[in-house]
Amino acid sequence: MLPWYEDDRLWAGLEAHLFDEERKKAAIEEVDQVLKLLRLGKGSEVLDLCCGPGRHSLELARRGFKVTGVDRTERYLEKARLEAASQGLTVKFVRDDMRTFRRCAAFDGAINLFTSFGYFEDPEDDRLVLRNLLESLRPGARLVLDMVGKENIGRTFTPKDWVEYPDGSFFLAERRVLPGWTMIRNRWIILRGGEKAEFDFSHRIFSAAELEALLKQEGFTVEGIFGGLDGSPYDLAAKRLVVVARA
Image (cartoon, rainbow, N blue to C red; front, side, top):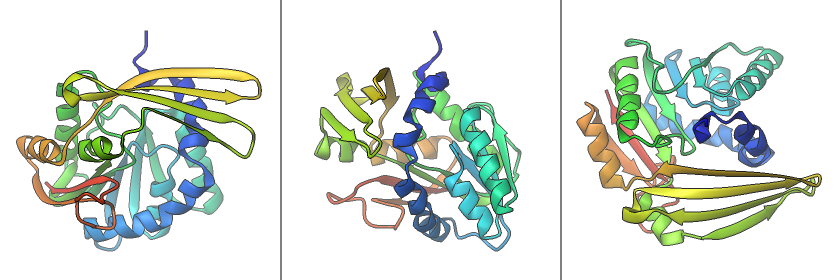
């Protein structure tokens, strides 16, 4: 049986939920914020690891950066390539696993956004991803990691919720924190056109201190911990956990 993150049915079913028009539009402001954190020079080379359908990759390319977007889901990459072509943008979209993708000292900055870290059952795989990122960055280059932190989850945890979309489809979510607060187990159900698709998966969750320690152990220098890409404090009002680390 395939691990959940290699199940293309999952990513196809979740596409409308994860990448709706509102999120596509939000990429403009998110890239504004990311660039302030990365402190990149004009024409820098940027890695968008787990780029999905390329909403951040395309926006970075639009601003003159040399972008490589990496994802394992061909469906998303094909859409990203078509969108890039339609807009006259040049982006290198690469199908690869984040545990194997590595380009020695090739990038001036890297981003891993939208809770795209901590997918794997074995914690050593998370370390491997960070080692690959460190090797792929030039000395002094920065990485921006963005996810929902353990502190956020503890404060706002909702065991169940659901969303109805304009097309009449429904998205239902059920969540359970595993013992020790190491991972969160999700059960997602999509109801569309009389059809039901159900997915069960887990991902690792990190506190700010745990993520900082992990990055330092793998050779990064942590420059800042924030409550959003806007650089706000990681406090009780924080909605995200964003860490800026330097190679």
